Length: 167
Image (cartoon, rainbow, N blue to C red; front, side, top):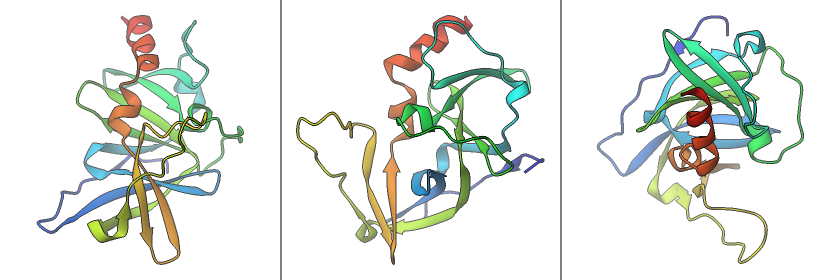
């Protein structure tokens, strides 16, 4: 994807919600399409590293005059690192408090999920697996999507470190 793709959608009048589906290590995740500003090809050379930030923060980039932190979700989710290729993209998110880019293995599509196609996130008790950023599981036929509250994920205390480093 050499050209940025604008993604526009709105919630329907029905009881469903649209999700942008992205891929990390062959697992599909869904985020609220209304949080997505655009999708861009990942270009490591345009990301400026910042000292003393968590490893999942790749750095910052200048997007039309706005300094945007770039977060690698594979590292954030403790997945094995994979090499960046032509499929790797940055999803630019327009969140309530900031604009953030997230690096993912790829984007597959936009799906409308009805409320009947979603269920609550599984509870793992006191295990080390954190589910605080998960809103649920979406099912569409044989497909299962992990639904992520991207706003909650990107407003964590760790992300505050980027704000303090950039200012």
